[in-house]
Length: 233
Image (tube, rainbow, N blue to C red):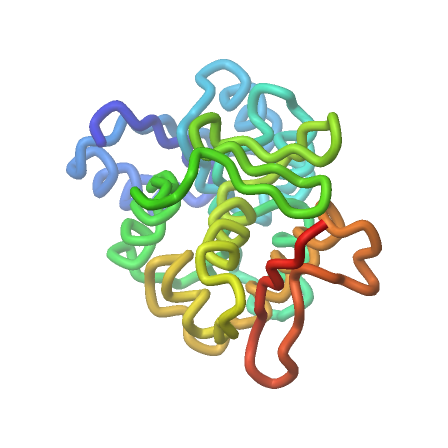
């Protein structure tokens, strides 16, 4: 949407120009910054709808920028797509562990980046037949407020974590394959990257289960995927 503001933080000018051109053409408001420190400052100043963040940046690297954004009360729920020239699995997982919602390895298709941006900017819309809240154990999802609480405490979920939880709950009792979850939540072909789902599932368990090492509600179905168990009490 034209009202969405995107912040691009990358030190490669030709890549920044290409991304900015496509974002501007699509009607987004686009800000660009070429180093990590200025990028973090710009994020705090403009409160963007989404951040495209390079991993290898001067002054402050992308992982540190991501960490600071997730600690900031006003920015912590901002979707982040991380870019990097590195393709090693450890880099990808580290980025996701620190709170990135998505990850792309250079060189990448600008068309695919645009599709991922659009997918991340979508907000979860509760199904019409859903009640405004759903409760399991001492966890409550308030669909109207787009908020999750555990006991009396608000649980901070990233957009992708919220969408994953919402999808599992709306299909409770069913086994959801990893590939299907990738397609439904990330909204594009993400073949071979099912580790992304595993990382987000682990985060959900840590935040919502009473014992994340022995989960009761978010169950692993070995070799297939995950199932949400609708257990009373």
